[in-house]
Image (spheres, rainbow, N blue to C red):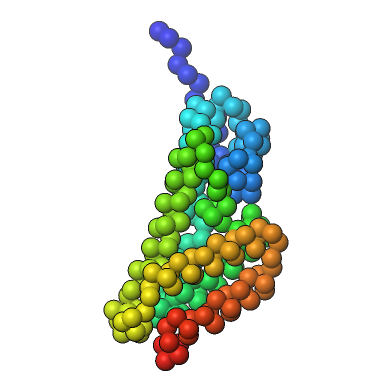
Length: 204
């Protein structure tokens, strides 16, 4: 009988989380295979056997990131009683999450890979899709505000969703560049000052 392959001697989930942290800190292109294998505690053949490729590992790491990181950001958006509170809490939770010092700053989905070429098109497409889904979540919450009568019928939900998604992406870059939580919260205050302009003073 042919010899059976040796069983994996590592915790796949733990190894994936460590890979996620490397990608989060360095991005897809900046994370070398030697850094990934060192962080994961495995050699290159084991990485390829378990995950297939660096690209597949990154995509799986991003999926893990969406499941375990930043969940308070999106629950704040859904659970807040008004659209205004939802957006403000969404941004304040973003400031908190992006400025934590026990993990990489900023957002993997915003910063993981931005420049598309033939070698990483699937990665950029995946991150672009996830960013679009996040913007769509903002859009749904704003449309709910209109449906519930909180916001005027002529409120431009799409423009507002794009604006606040863009603010969040900018906060990710600020955090990566070393901005403190206080600085990020100042950005939140500025972004919320625009709410009256978009919603009308009576909707604040």
